[in-house]
Length: 396
Image (cartoon, rainbow, N blue to C red; front, side, top):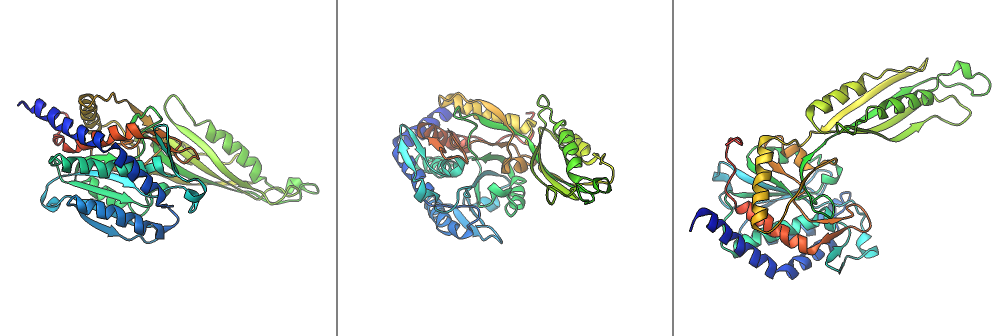
């Protein structure tokens, strides 16, 4: 049997097992959705992580629950013998959702017409289900991952991963490749092969108060200056180059009959590359007040670097597409304007993102997962984890 024939035979065994367990996959996802885990309720993660730890233990993985300082902490699981290996393959997910505690009671998850609808189903308990069943498929087919697997599941991704980011970076530095189980892009299920950098800036304007009717000339309007600054910021948006600038929140003034002594704006900025992020950062920080008597202060910068199409990322994507074809899947890639832990991991290892569930409505009331596509993505992840390591030099 040639290597290609052996790969195809292994992938058929994976698919056969996964398709035979499609009902179990749907039921498992339903159970995870019913266990609510809002980011702002750290206590809710105890039962959830205990459940996942038990499932990983059954597969022979070692686990560690790392408590958080202000979050629910994280769960890590890894292959036995992982400490003796030169490289690992890293699987990243998050358990936290944007939905307040009690949402499941108000909007119970429901299976119908080939989908499972429920809060947190797509973002990203579908991806966590995919992880567990991909490893189960390999175990059932007596297939070993080509590299030790290390799974990290955080509880703070929805707020920018403040406590888990450093650990993700440390693990990515040891990784041959990284799979991020964020939802795929759109109902078409496009995989995220690039992500924009994400920046946050705060604009503060100081003016001078005065009575708007008696002596307006004695004042300096921070609101007037804010209007000018908002216009200047929005002019920095360049859709063609992928740069977007959005003034999303503003505060100004005291009352209508007082010339505004202060104003403030919160600004979201996205950029596709390090170069464009640096350029737009310089443009924002170079803004100067033009309204007489006002002073302008700008703070902030980019907190998530871009996930760019590096040689390693392109090689991993080629591998995934090739494996997908053998599984009968036609996979498309796309760039996402949003950010994830993949932005940080990709700075240190070949990374593919949006590798999780297919569906629609993340963070919305109609959030749902396509169950047939989830089955396919379980098989895809299992086959990719089984696939041989990437070469050290991506150009090879």
